[in-house]
Figure (tube, rainbow, N blue to C red):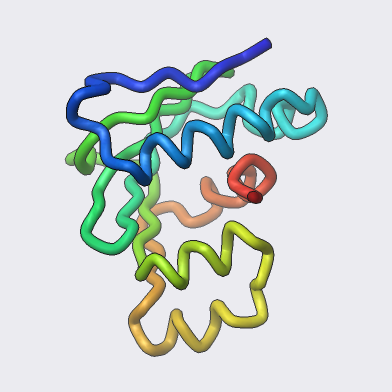
Length: 120
């Protein structure tokens, strides 16, 4: 079974540990894992003041502390906005997007396959 690895465990935020647990649960489902198993991308995540990035390389997934200098895409937002996305409450996202509480950057199409593994 695939498993998310954490690089530099002593530097990872609580958000990184929670993210690992959520992704591990979702990639245990072969159907969900198949949606991300061929990705080669780096995604910066900003959750409140916590910064981390996902490195996805053909089925291997790592959570690393801090932001990567050259990500494929980025997602940032308040804890509330990120939780709304993670819990599938997409109807709340446009208001947060337009108020600046939720931001996307880079190749946002690279974020679409991630939706299946970031659901709580």
